[in-house]
Image 1 (cartoon, rainbow, N blue to C red):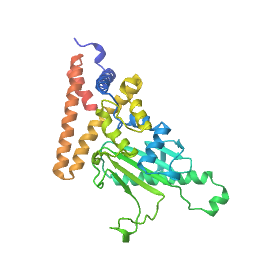
Image 2 (cartoon, rainbow, N blue to C red):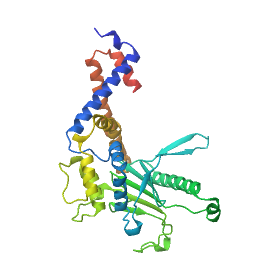
Image 3 (spheres, one colour):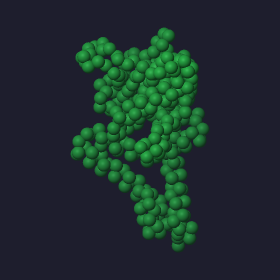
Image 4 (cartoon, helix red, strand yellow):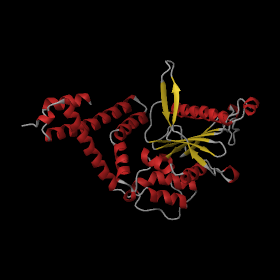
Amino acid sequence: NSPPFFWHDSCIIRGMSRLSKQLIREKVEEIRKHKFFDPTYDPVFKKIFRNKTNLMHFLNAVLHLEGENRIKSVGHLKPAIKMRNLAGKEKKILFDIHARTADGRFIDIEMQRATQEDFLDRIELYSTLLSVNAKLSLDAQASKKQRNDHPYLMPTVYSIWICNFPVPFCREFHEELALFRTSDVGNSHPLTIYPKKRYIIIDLTKYIPTEATSPENQWIELFRNLPTAKAVPRGIDNVVRAVYRQLLVKKATETFITEVATGMIDKDEFNACMSYARREGYEEGEAKGEARAKRKFAARDKKIAEYFRSIGVPKKHIETAMAIR
């Protein structure tokens, strides 16, 4: 006989909670099989760049900043930027890493595991919000005279996107978008009209290992290779070496491992399936991607149903629970 405990909807929800915990435990065990964490997952990515030394080193590397232009000090800012729609409702835009340098440059770094619709629009939206927020901050700290003398003065902003999928408009692993004169199209040294706004796109899939050991190469190889790495590479910069050691699974707390595992469930499968569909770019490719997504979720739902049956949940309640999902 089935225990009375499972004969109520509220109890089914508790049963689903148990299943979620089971899935998380399975994902935790999967993580423990690896030497290092995958840095492309949100909790790991943010763990890296909460460290200001890591953040400065990475920025100087990918922005190719040298000499007096190098970032020497940086502070983290709140990740949320608020915007209102026409109905007056607030919507929050969350930056992965939002920071400001001591000399007044504002930075947004985004980690993208899978492509999505309107990707270029998203890049521009985030960069625009970064610029507006930076302008408000600049004016808030300026004197009244400074604001009157330079009402349109804008700070420099860096919008950096690390992409773990093929970006259609990227020919190389490191691409920079900017405003140029149309007459400079085809010129190997075009004039940048507005150098205060820089977009850096890192396409991890297009990186080809070379003998070069520049700081940027070391960071790109970290993001590409860490999920399967067996040891800390030799001959790398001390800061990058420290990141490898920070991301050793055996040194992590149970809480952090669970946080990473939780973030990997469901969303990762969905992103992978839809990324496949969008990369195809054609109706047939999208149909294949949709079909693949359905197969993935069908397999997951079958596992959920089997778990409920194993603990004595009646068939009609299983069907009700799956319908809710």
